[in-house]
Length: 196
Image 1 (spheres, helix red, strand yellow):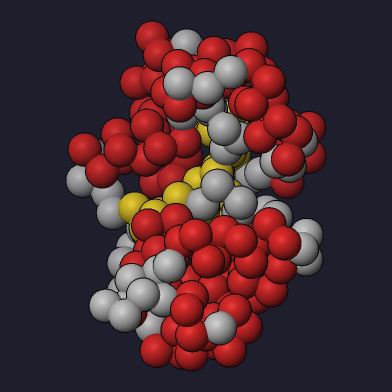
Image 2 (cartoon, rainbow, N blue to C red):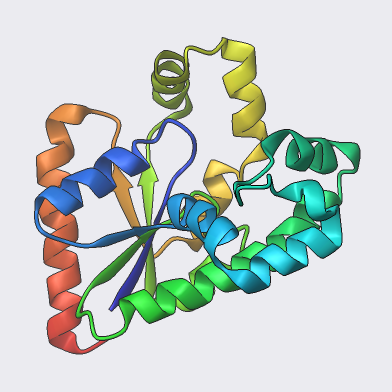
Protein backbone atom coordinates (compact mmCIF):
# COMPACT_ATOMS: atom_id res chain seq x y z
CA UNK A 1 0.00 0.00 0.00
CA UNK A 2 1.36 3.39 -1.03
CA UNK A 3 0.57 6.24 1.38
CA UNK A 4 1.27 9.92 0.78
CA UNK A 5 1.85 12.17 3.78
CA UNK A 6 1.61 15.93 3.42
CA UNK A 7 0.94 19.04 5.46
CA UNK A 8 1.47 22.78 5.40
CA UNK A 9 4.52 24.54 6.77
CA UNK A 10 4.77 24.04 10.54
CA UNK A 11 2.18 21.25 10.62
CA UNK A 12 4.72 18.72 11.88
CA UNK A 13 4.73 16.52 8.77
CA UNK A 14 8.44 15.68 9.01
CA UNK A 15 8.14 15.06 12.75
CA UNK A 16 5.34 12.55 12.15
CA UNK A 17 7.36 10.86 9.40
CA UNK A 18 10.33 10.52 11.76
CA UNK A 19 8.04 8.90 14.35
CA UNK A 20 6.91 6.43 11.68
CA UNK A 21 10.56 5.59 10.98
CA UNK A 22 11.12 5.04 14.71
CA UNK A 23 8.26 2.51 14.59
CA UNK A 24 10.05 0.63 11.81
CA UNK A 25 8.22 2.00 8.75
CA UNK A 26 10.06 3.17 5.67
CA UNK A 27 9.34 6.71 4.45
CA UNK A 28 10.44 8.09 1.08
CA UNK A 29 11.24 11.80 1.39
CA UNK A 30 10.47 13.51 -1.93
CA UNK A 31 12.57 16.62 -1.21
CA UNK A 32 15.68 14.63 -0.28
CA UNK A 33 15.32 12.20 -3.17
CA UNK A 34 14.71 15.02 -5.68
CA UNK A 35 18.00 16.63 -4.59
CA UNK A 36 19.77 13.28 -4.99
CA UNK A 37 18.28 12.59 -8.42
CA UNK A 38 19.20 16.07 -9.67
CA UNK A 39 22.89 15.16 -9.33
CA UNK A 40 22.68 11.42 -10.10
CA UNK A 41 20.09 10.97 -12.85
CA UNK A 42 21.66 11.48 -16.29
CA UNK A 43 18.32 12.33 -17.92
CA UNK A 44 17.57 15.07 -15.37
CA UNK A 45 21.11 16.45 -15.67
CA UNK A 46 21.00 16.65 -19.48
CA UNK A 47 17.50 18.18 -19.46
CA UNK A 48 18.38 20.80 -16.83
CA UNK A 49 21.52 21.71 -18.76
CA UNK A 50 19.44 22.06 -21.92
CA UNK A 51 16.94 24.26 -20.06
CA UNK A 52 19.28 26.42 -17.96
CA UNK A 53 22.71 25.96 -19.53
CA UNK A 54 25.79 23.86 -18.77
CA UNK A 55 26.59 26.10 -15.80
CA UNK A 56 23.53 24.68 -13.98
CA UNK A 57 26.16 22.29 -12.59
CA UNK A 58 29.59 22.99 -11.18
CA UNK A 59 32.64 21.25 -12.75
CA UNK A 60 32.52 18.58 -10.00
CA UNK A 61 28.89 17.73 -10.81
CA UNK A 62 27.14 19.54 -7.95
CA UNK A 63 24.12 21.75 -8.51
CA UNK A 64 25.14 25.35 -9.13
CA UNK A 65 22.57 26.75 -6.73
CA UNK A 66 23.10 30.48 -7.47
CA UNK A 67 22.64 29.86 -11.21
CA UNK A 68 19.51 27.77 -10.65
CA UNK A 69 18.09 30.32 -8.18
CA UNK A 70 18.66 33.11 -10.70
CA UNK A 71 16.87 31.08 -13.37
CA UNK A 72 13.92 30.36 -11.05
CA UNK A 73 13.51 33.99 -9.97
CA UNK A 74 13.96 35.46 -13.45
CA UNK A 75 10.54 34.25 -14.64
CA UNK A 76 7.53 32.98 -12.67
CA UNK A 77 7.01 30.12 -15.16
CA UNK A 78 10.53 28.72 -14.76
CA UNK A 79 9.68 26.78 -11.60
CA UNK A 80 7.10 24.78 -13.53
CA UNK A 81 9.69 24.05 -16.24
CA UNK A 82 12.15 22.64 -13.70
CA UNK A 83 9.37 20.69 -11.97
CA UNK A 84 8.30 19.14 -15.29
CA UNK A 85 11.78 17.61 -15.49
CA UNK A 86 12.27 16.61 -11.84
CA UNK A 87 8.79 15.50 -10.72
CA UNK A 88 8.30 12.63 -13.22
CA UNK A 89 11.70 11.23 -12.24
CA UNK A 90 10.85 11.41 -8.53
CA UNK A 91 7.51 9.67 -9.11
CA UNK A 92 9.24 6.90 -11.08
CA UNK A 93 11.92 6.55 -8.38
CA UNK A 94 9.29 6.34 -5.62
CA UNK A 95 7.32 3.66 -7.48
CA UNK A 96 10.52 1.64 -7.97
CA UNK A 97 11.40 2.08 -4.27
CA UNK A 98 7.86 1.13 -3.15
CA UNK A 99 7.72 -2.05 -5.22
CA UNK A 100 7.32 -5.14 -3.06
CA UNK A 101 6.73 -3.19 0.17
CA UNK A 102 3.46 -3.89 1.99
CA UNK A 103 3.44 -0.28 3.26
CA UNK A 104 5.39 2.46 1.48
CA UNK A 105 5.06 5.95 2.93
CA UNK A 106 5.90 9.05 0.92
CA UNK A 107 6.57 12.43 2.55
CA UNK A 108 5.71 15.20 0.10
CA UNK A 109 5.13 18.86 0.98
CA UNK A 110 3.41 19.51 -2.36
CA UNK A 111 1.55 16.21 -2.68
CA UNK A 112 -1.65 17.67 -4.16
CA UNK A 113 -0.11 20.61 -6.02
CA UNK A 114 2.38 18.38 -7.86
CA UNK A 115 0.00 15.51 -8.67
CA UNK A 116 2.00 13.10 -6.50
CA UNK A 117 -1.31 12.02 -4.93
CA UNK A 118 -1.91 10.13 -8.22
CA UNK A 119 0.80 7.55 -7.40
CA UNK A 120 -0.39 6.67 -3.89
CA UNK A 121 -3.36 4.61 -2.71
CA UNK A 122 -4.43 7.15 -0.13
CA UNK A 123 -3.32 10.44 1.40
CA UNK A 124 -2.73 11.62 4.96
CA UNK A 125 -2.84 15.31 5.83
CA UNK A 126 -0.91 16.29 8.96
CA UNK A 127 -3.02 19.20 10.18
CA UNK A 128 -2.53 21.90 12.79
CA UNK A 129 -4.28 25.23 13.08
CA UNK A 130 -2.66 28.31 11.52
CA UNK A 131 -1.62 29.80 14.87
CA UNK A 132 0.31 26.67 15.87
CA UNK A 133 1.88 26.30 12.43
CA UNK A 134 3.02 29.92 12.44
CA UNK A 135 4.58 29.63 15.91
CA UNK A 136 6.37 26.35 15.10
CA UNK A 137 7.72 27.51 11.73
CA UNK A 138 8.95 30.85 13.09
CA UNK A 139 10.86 29.02 15.84
CA UNK A 140 12.21 26.28 13.54
CA UNK A 141 13.33 28.59 10.71
CA UNK A 142 14.24 31.59 12.86
CA UNK A 143 11.96 33.60 10.58
CA UNK A 144 9.61 36.54 10.99
CA UNK A 145 5.84 36.26 11.19
CA UNK A 146 5.56 37.94 7.78
CA UNK A 147 8.03 35.54 6.14
CA UNK A 148 6.15 32.47 7.37
CA UNK A 149 2.75 33.93 6.51
CA UNK A 150 3.97 34.54 2.94
CA UNK A 151 5.07 30.91 2.68
CA UNK A 152 1.74 29.73 4.09
CA UNK A 153 -0.10 31.85 1.52
CA UNK A 154 1.88 30.22 -1.29
CA UNK A 155 0.74 26.73 -0.26
CA UNK A 156 -2.55 24.96 -0.91
CA UNK A 157 -5.21 26.26 1.49
CA UNK A 158 -6.08 24.29 4.63
CA UNK A 159 -9.67 23.93 3.44
CA UNK A 160 -8.70 22.49 0.07
CA UNK A 161 -6.11 20.14 1.56
CA UNK A 162 -8.64 18.82 4.09
CA UNK A 163 -11.17 18.19 1.34
CA UNK A 164 -8.67 16.28 -0.79
CA UNK A 165 -7.05 14.20 1.96
CA UNK A 166 -8.31 10.70 2.74
CA UNK A 167 -7.20 10.88 6.38
CA UNK A 168 -6.48 13.82 8.70
CA UNK A 169 -3.81 13.44 11.38
CA UNK A 170 -4.56 16.17 13.92
CA UNK A 171 -1.32 17.56 15.29
CA UNK A 172 -2.19 20.67 17.28
CA UNK A 173 -0.93 19.28 20.56
CA UNK A 174 2.20 17.12 20.99
CA UNK A 175 0.51 15.43 23.99
CA UNK A 176 -1.97 13.75 21.62
CA UNK A 177 0.62 12.67 19.01
CA UNK A 178 0.99 9.11 20.29
CA UNK A 179 -2.76 8.57 20.31
CA UNK A 180 -3.13 10.04 16.82
CA UNK A 181 -0.28 7.83 15.57
CA UNK A 182 -1.95 4.73 17.01
CA UNK A 183 -5.22 5.69 15.28
CA UNK A 184 -3.40 6.15 11.95
CA UNK A 185 -1.61 2.78 12.19
CA UNK A 186 -4.91 1.09 13.13
CA UNK A 187 -6.61 2.72 10.11
CA UNK A 188 -3.81 1.54 7.78
CA UNK A 189 -3.91 -2.01 9.15
CA UNK A 190 -7.68 -2.13 8.73
CA UNK A 191 -7.33 -1.04 5.10
CA UNK A 192 -4.64 -3.68 4.53
CA UNK A 193 -6.87 -6.37 6.03
CA UNK A 194 -9.76 -5.21 3.83
CA UNK A 195 -7.45 -5.44 0.83
CA UNK A 196 -7.82 -1.83 -0.38
